[in-house]
Length: 132
Image (cartoon, rainbow, N blue to C red; front, side, top):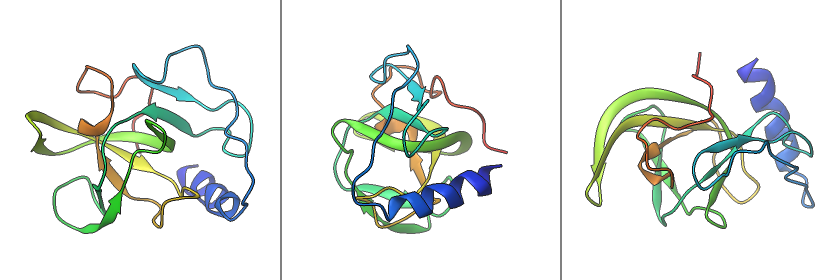
């Protein structure tokens, strides 16, 4: 299912005009919410912060593919969460990572981002399914 969703999201990323869609009742600033309609239905949007955030090919500090900025205080089109290598940044430490799909303004897809950059206070990203 993850590959199917990722493929659909990759195709949709080529569309210049898109609709993010509505989310469930949870607040994106405190967790992740599922997009219930629009082009990226089925993916999640998470409140996020930061610039020049490293993108990794696995949930750990190696394999850096590039960098990205949080878009409007969010990571849109997130697929799931997974435990990985414990990393520290800016006084924060976390071992949770989020798996992302292709984003219209990101050059990469299917990459991992440390959950340190999510705005929620808990280490484990709330509102996201586990990756399989």
